[in-house]
Figure: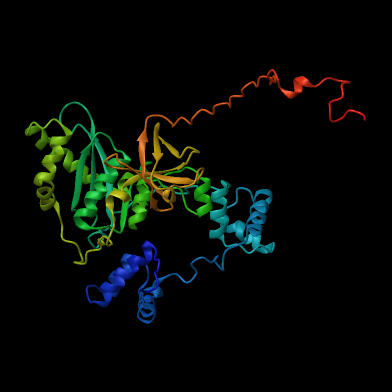
Length: 424
């Protein structure tokens, strides 16, 4: 049996794209764009793959610190000098002054440090300038996503239409929900992935569903990760980049499409006297989406599809899910949203008390429990198990022993010699 090789999602995607190039299914330039690398880097990766096999695609610096990283002492000294002498300066000028003082820090590195420390914030110096952006050339290269609240059913109550539209072709999928929520974004993105594949990037507004401004948690700081939303975490698992739009006009493709749908779809639903979200979604899945796409879809500039196929064994139910970390109590229970989960199963599969587990809530409201990537058996309980009460030992009071009548002790008399001890 050969040696087991562990590869990251990024390395597995690179393996898939290189295999397609070597089999003649696609060009090097298309594979390079999907992976976000240059053609030259793509050729180097292919050469390493030919010479070393799958292991040639693994990163050489895995498990080792970067050779170009600055030490914590250098970072602390640079920030201290900035606060004392250059407070309010831009990172470019401040980095030049720091270099004159013997602290060699590039302006981009200093900018990241200052942003993380909250010491600098970019200020807009000009009015926003907008010009028409040309469509992308490939299907799946960029997909715009947005929620449109509107009285779609003509009941006088606003509900939300979640819409995803391809920037190159205008093809899309959409579905109605009560509100624009993370679950709604996950559902419509899952529909897209199952229908067309994994897009390269999503273009969205700055709604808290897609982006977050919160500070990194301790666990994220330890792992060197940036704060992301639940939807962003699901997209990261599939390798989908989320690009924030600076204004509604920037994602005009989906905004204009929402206006067309508010005119056409709303009238169609009201004409058919559809008054519930369930019936409306059944109508959309019954063929209306295909008809609408056929009416407004355009031919892309290139015939190459940039939607990536799912890797073998990918479980979309596990990807589009909510995940939170919890601590295991001493009685092997986990508390999740006012619900107790009692860990069961063989002892070798039970995580130790006080350890951290991941509670995964899927879109069908089912729960999963994972410890270090391994599923943990559990069952919901109504209350914590009550430990048995410790019973105090019963101490019997011993009665004094009284020798019976005729016992030798009763024959003994002080001062009286017995027969054996009598004097001659």
